[in-house]
Length: 242
Length: 242
DNA sequence: CAGTTCATATAGCAATGCTATAGGTGATAG
DNA sequence: CTATCACCTATAGCATTGCTATATGAACTG
Image (cartoon, rainbow over all chains, first blue to last red; front, side, top):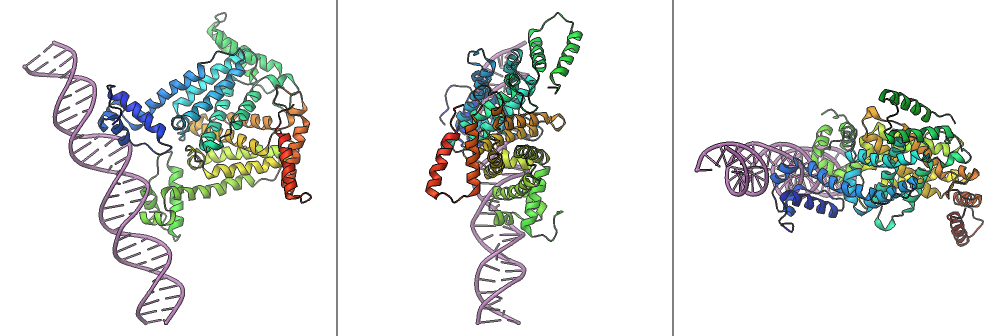
């Protein structure tokens, strides 16, 4: 109809799907709508993408590029935890700007099969947390911290999307964000350790060294030596001794 | 087929829907499957529930009864924050035991239309947090705390459901849970206030008084006086002065 | 030019959610 | 005991869905 440009049909299908998805306001988008808008018939869709889900995966992949670009395109502030804060905010903003796309990416949960996107987003978050760990700012393993923060981040974003736009209160995001980052950070270990969530400086140092080692690819130890050494470090840094 | 008991068709439909949903392993459940299992034809379904969604809402309502029962059926431990912890764990367990039902209840997010369940769950959480606030254990408004905790709780549960059952690591839940509760609690205000997240004891006391007043339904002030008084309290308790 | 491969269209299938219409059942009124 | 009436259920079928078996065109290769 309106996308009859000179672009190849594959591109037109992608754009039509993305456009309809963005306007769908939550309603389902049919393959017929997509092919009609793309000026193409059904078999073309299945030839290029195999599946309706395949097409949506491709749309998601494009959306993920944009997401990753947003997550990386800011100068490191020097303070890794501050950067984590920005990643969080960027995640929420991405979800609120393109709620339908976000729902396909992060909201389409089914038992025992998690979207590939989640693993990628976790890796992105973990990467940043490694820097924090290397700077001795982390209280827990970067991977665990990344999973925890991302889970909360997704939960908050889904809640905000579900709310009427007029009622959306970003305070929810800010509050949850700071709660997660604070709990994961080593800051509290310097003050009075409340309850049992404070870790000793030994643990913090072990986590930092662990992260530094994994980042440096040092070859001063053989691979087998390194493996054992890392195992010990891991044992220390996951101990609950205060 | 197998549900041809003496139960009225409405009940048989509910049970059939619930049973198929539980076994569906994420796949869609069709009305024909449901009606066939219930030994009933299509119009019966639409007569009683109007809609496929109406039927599922009814299933969800039944599931929610169970959920609420789980959230309430434990003796208060005396420590409201400990009870919040149990509510969190119960929420996660409910999601892992009946993932499909949970996904219909909390995972079926669409823009600008949030499941009624979410509001109910928030109210449940807020109710418990009011006790914590009355005991001076809360750092923020109970409602905000409830929304924040529930968002994280849902996010974590969705993540766990999406993981292969063999890999599920409840550490994620425990860690996020304690992070949220700690951040929301007043405990940190007693120790060294890290960054700017510590609130003065005045703020904590104001929040506690606020909660106590709203719970007591005191009639020592006229309704207009009370309204103004609460407004002042709210202003105090939301101030960011440390 | 013949052959092969890729890309698109025609036509249609099975399954889906849902409904217009009619038939059957029980309770209540006369 | 019959008539009425509201309620519940079934027969049959519609429109839409995701998807495909088959055929046609185009473009390159020998």
